[in-house]
Image (cartoon, rainbow, N blue to C red; front, side):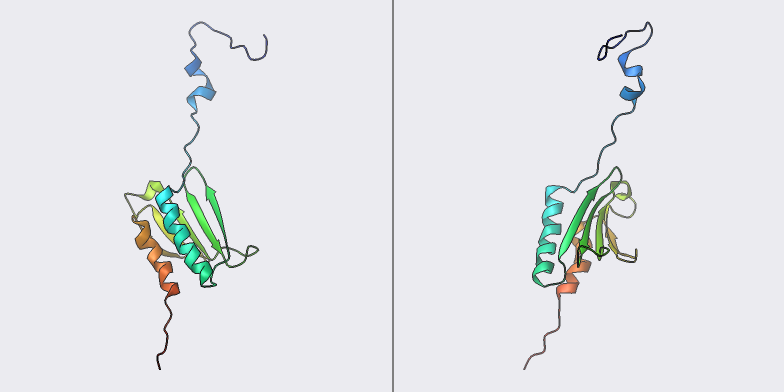
Length: 126
């Protein structure tokens, strides 16, 4: 049989093949609005000198935005989106370097508020 030619067998359809039945898994990404919120916070933290680098990853179950102080180190924080947890604990989570979940919820702005507090510093008046 020539390469690239599909053989027809009686009683079989093209949708019966293993390749057709195993649909490609959907990938999880951040939406444009979510990325705007995350990158806005990232920009403020870079300006404050707290963060210097980031990495993004997508997967079948989770999308991750990792924040680094230096690119050679482990991430300080991971911002994760897990749509499977949307109805249970909330799709978004902020996770610290040691794996501790700092905040989890359905609204990304509220979840990121835990990191916004790091920008607030007490200034003594005269």
